[in-house]
Image 1 (cartoon, rainbow, N blue to C red):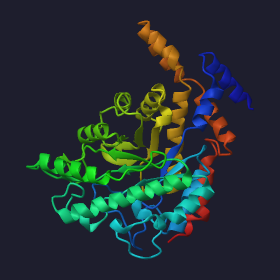
Image 2 (image 1 turned 120 degrees about the vertical axis):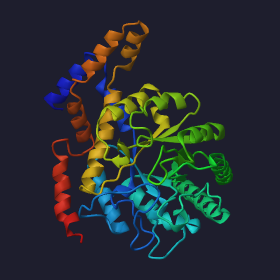
Image 3 (image 1 turned 30 degrees about the vertical axis):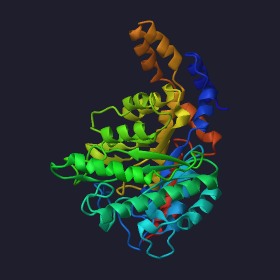
Image 4 (image 1 turned 180 degrees about the horizontal axis):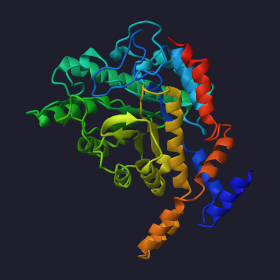
Length: 417
């Protein structure tokens, strides 16, 4: 144990914080890494599959994008070696192992994901899942589950039913729930005349999808809202108000994506509100820049506030945290490492907070004392504790991990055309 870490233990003990307890809590915390950072949200439905539609896009063309399932798994497996702790992997339906065959989305089955289950077990990973409601001709007009075209709507209902079946299969295979998240791009560029009608259809579609019930030990369902997107600037059918009402009335989790709200809105404030009425919650941790641009996560105030609110709630084991950023302008493995490590550092800082003392000061009316203690925590030796956590997990420290990223780029990524 280094002198620097012993010094950190002493400093945190001065404010009544037990580092060992904080590290134990962080060891039990899992991120769900997103598979789509390694290939720019392309998927593998066809040899030339690429992201399209749905109000989302990647920018940049940095060399080394994963072109096959084997390359994708290799990249994710390497990235995991740079991220301390035990984590999960979040798959989109478009990432099935289709063996070069064209499989329509309403026909996907667990067999198309068996190789993912096998690989995940080898990597000691648990799997989560998402229906893929974009990059498809039947989503080109901007509507899926809320479409007024019954054939279009029925296709996407069938796809989402299949996606839930696959997520439940994951849950059975891994012995713990797989989280299935439902996000749709539905909306209009300009003001619609029938907001009520589209939302009524969406309620009916969702109710049809959720008719099939799975044991909670296999599957947990979440629905994800959005403020706006490219092509849906004026109206998003699945807004926060809509899904908040639906989730509470149907006993589902809501997914708060940190990039899906107004840039000045503090998403962390929503955690304590929703958890008064539901027992669990899904978060998508991203970093918006002007709009829902899903920048690589950094340890900034928004992320710090989010981790604090989750930990302070005492329900941190009931809050599922997934990453959701994609950047094609930089080394994609570096993006995984920087974003994941930033998220983990935020949760570590939250576990190292003297929360009870802060509350006592607040309840005593000593608000300046609460401010002073909060400010004191900002100068504590968090980095020494973080490096110790990395060493505990046989993971490169903050000063070392980018050497591994550059080495992988030289030896692996640079050889891809």
